[in-house]
Image (cartoon, rainbow, N blue to C red; front, side):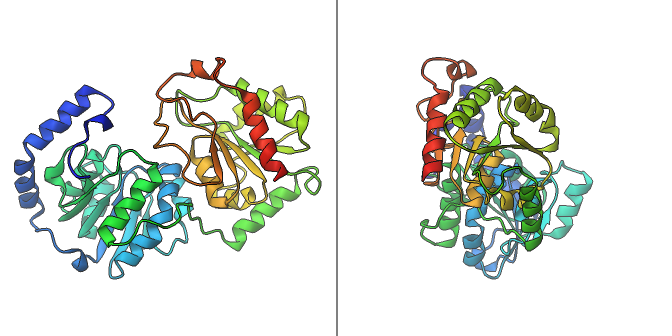
Length: 372
């Protein structure tokens, strides 16, 4: 639907700010057209587009499922995307993308801003469904005449091609709907993330696999415990309890995975467990990591980038959704992933410690998937 959706706001203050932007929408519309010096043009005339929005690993990954359809819908238009490291790695080799610009959304007047301005893009796709103000305003300041975005949180005066939203639904489905609307396709394609793994990536992954004890006799379970989210996540002690229960009833090899900066946390978890594990802290970059995950039977993860890396690898993912997030928007979007806290949302970590949550349930689900 088009128009504002009050229930999509987390606070009354945010709603009031959005309503204020709608009150001055006619002024914004005129001002943006005068500023860019170019009028909006029909989609068939677009030749050079820029994708802008949230750019963490997960944000990029779950949108990768619809990039092929975006390119198909605009065969005469090439697309660049803003994606800083390490998220840029998962887009390498994607035929739908002309250029990966390894940067965040730049500040006005910065070197990166001037670099983008010289590109003279004629369309910007501001793909965020939650908070699209920054990419939309930046696209306007860059002088891009065609700006695709949602309008359910205001700022419609800066949007030249409005996109309706079906709220709420899983985040990957939002982007699929957006692409379907602007290209005229049916939103029926698979939402599995696309990562283009190379033979070199597979070789690096295999080298790591060969270093793991009992590699030929025990199935691998990859476990990711770190996340950039400061609250609403499963405590490390609960991960330890889950892995102890899992190992006691299933012959498995646990691989504790994460980035290089997670080595202390992973080593702490490894030392607390009563059985041998293997630590992979930044040993593999993201594409080789996807290649390695294909050797695993199950992934246990926080609701973070690794969840979507596991989905890209095509193996079952058991994940602990952040309790401060929407159960629908961050819920399962594939039939190979399992949200272990579907009945809790917008709450605190204390619910991970109460009777309503059971680490045994998580261990049993992983055991069930291993037996399949």
